[in-house]
Length: 458
Image (cartoon, rainbow, N blue to C red; front, side, top):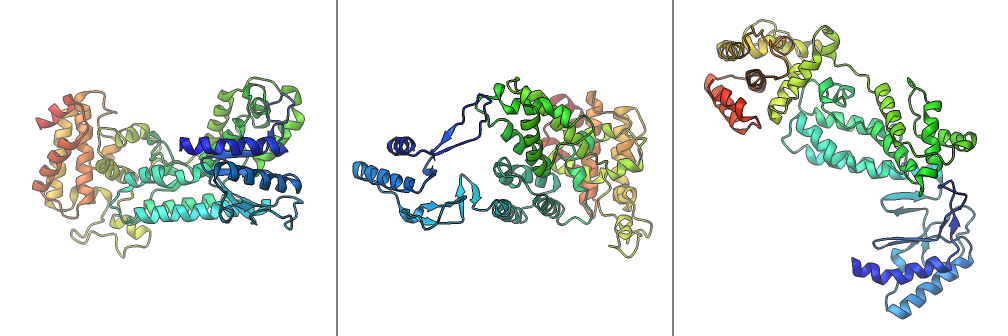
């Protein structure tokens, strides 16, 4: 690649010297309008022609380069896109097109086609990435990690240049919802999934908010001299245009607000770029737009849900345990009572016990084995914490232990999560299987040695 760059350097320098290019808007605040004639990235070379005679200059330069180096530009792989008043009957060495891809961004001859040309292809890529993951045996926690790592990053490069449309946000959110909860009878709202772990969520990236932050940040950092730019002025007037309690604008509003800052706040040019203000403005915007409260939290507002969510998301748990405890805490494990409430079951009664199949019954009372397992686990947790442990799911709200502050409390919390995970994921509970499950989880868990010593004595 270095050798290729060395070979291409004379051509790029010659084009830059011979083509007049175009003058870009002043982005530095110093009064100088930067000139743009040619750019090169790897093997993509983009040249800007302002006049019809520039086409002759381009052809002559390419011929000279070919004679000197023996390398000729492939006309079939080159494209020309007319903009503004440029006539398509102007002769060039390559064909005219109405759209062109440059560094992953599709540019079109009409501004109104720009969004659709870019985001339709991105939506297809997102759909294919999600479809590929559906054949994998992933739980909800793992699917969120997959979405954050492999699916949503397909949007970020483009979102920093082209505003993400409201339609695209809806499509991505719907696609993620189907992917995350495929195979599960009930689901947690997407507005809750994007919350931090200590708020009851799984830190799923919010497509709309992150795209807006990237787009705004790209504009603010585009200046060659940030400390003396309109970007600096924009950051200073953000607090005036959008005081605390109001939200930052959507895609179209960004441009409107930027123009407003450029025309009204000329006296603020030259001020130092205040990145802290930008970060604070985005945080306020996020706070104003992410206000979801988990349903279980609304039903029982008196409980210490901060402690509950800290325990559920504790790093002491492996992925499988965290997934089960997360769904149990949110009440979406698909009991007959919940299924009947959503018209997905004919009766609320447990088919084996003929009593309402609540979460408590499903985890701790259905059959002698479940009662035996929960009795042993709750007795052990009580011995570790010195407090009576109620039946699930009340265990998570009133467990008798706080976020692990002692070795025994940490061991009790770990045992509670493992027990819930075992009882939630198995249709038929067996005491012997439970003992093997606990030993396997204890061997694989990433827990401190002191906690492991306590668990080994159980």
